[in-house]
Each structure stands twice: as structure tokens, then as C-alpha cells.
Image (cartoon, rainbow, N blue to C red):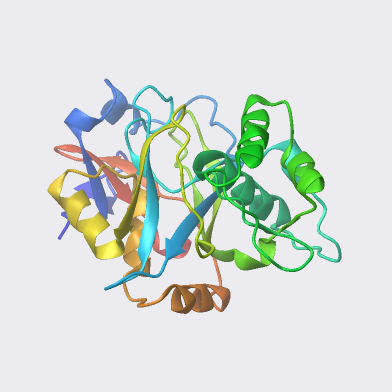
Length: 278
């Protein structure tokens, strides 16, 4: 159980997650005690928790970020990233979903980072993946280089993004003391049957499929570094024995934004979620 620690204002906090000093940038622990002069505005972002049924339990896809990246280097994460202006331009007929740009961004990020395109053809069939379709890999390269948009890919292949297959799961906002902040919507999605994941080596070191229990076990053992929202997402998925059960539960759950606070502890930095933000 986490111990209570005093914040700069003398108020006791109970960290749910602690990052040791040796895993923090120099001076970061001191910086959490003071708000920056200019608080960064969170950028819209989307994350997709890709799942597949397996024996003995469902597995989730985790990608290890390159250690040279500017954001959480070396950590295992779900596919995701910032919402691009072009994401909002991808029209889905008859849908006025306020989260549409986030859903489209999640589909684009999955395609860029794994080579799996969550889109369907006119007959309802799933798009191929980049391993089995070299032509789609060319489009992936063009998309990642900025020479094309997801809308271009979909139009060329006559595909429609499978936005209805993404179940809204959670909403995380980066703490105010961080210099890079994101306003991120998390979605659950099932890996289409027979599709093969191939991580893009420019951003990711490897892609691994793990049961939730195994991922959390490795995290506790210190061999699978993850950031707080990733860990909390895995913990929330522990009770589900099938992908369908997880998707069904997410579709019926009200999502509220979570804005964690960072507090300095004796051995590092703790993460606190205030009761009203749960």
C-alpha cells in the first residue's frame, strides 16, 4: 500500500503509482513542487488498445518505444499519438460523433505503428495488413512521410474506417507540471482475424502480445517499463475473459476525464488521482 506524502501545500496525498528517482530526468522531482510559469495546453491525442482472444486469456498489444524518442523513451505503450488536422477531414457518412477525429486518429496511428488498417471494404471485409499486401506498405510509408493522408489511403483502396469497432474506454490528461501535455482518448479494438502486426522500426523497438496478467507481472518485476495510464488501463482489463466482454463493458460505461497530480515522495515522484477526477 502506498504511503501518504505531504504536498507543497501541506495536504496529504496518497500516491497510487511511484516513479523512482533513478528513472526520472535530472531535476524533475524538484520541478513537480512548482507550477510552470506557462502551463502547456494539452494537445488532442488518441490511443488504441488492440486486443485479441488467446488461450488462456485475451492478449493486448504493447509496443516498445525507441530510447531516442522525446516522449517516454523505452517505455511499452499502446499504439497512439496526436490528432492531426487531416484526421478531422476524414468524413464518415451519417456520423456526427464528437469523438470522430479521435477515432480516426486512433485508426491512423494503429496503421502507422503496426501495419494493420482498421477499415472495411464495400462488402464488409477487413482491409489486408502491410505484411501480406506490399502495396499497402507503400501507402503506409507515404502516410508516415507526410506525402499522403489517411483519407488518401482509404479513397485509393475504397475503404471505410471501422470507427464503430472502437469502444471508448478512458480519457487521460497529462499532469499540469509536464512540459508536453496530451488530452488523450483511449479506445479498445479487436485485432481483425488473421491480420499480422509489424511494428515500424523508426518509432518502435518491438511489438509484443501479452496477457494482461503477464504484462503487469513483468511491470512489477521491472522488466516491462510502462507509464501510469498504460498500467491503469491493463488493471481495468483484468476482469475480462474475452475481447468481446471487454468491448461490451466499455460500450456501456460512462467515461470521465482523469487529470493526475504529481507529488514529490521520499524516493521519487508519486502520481495522485483526486477523488473528483475518478
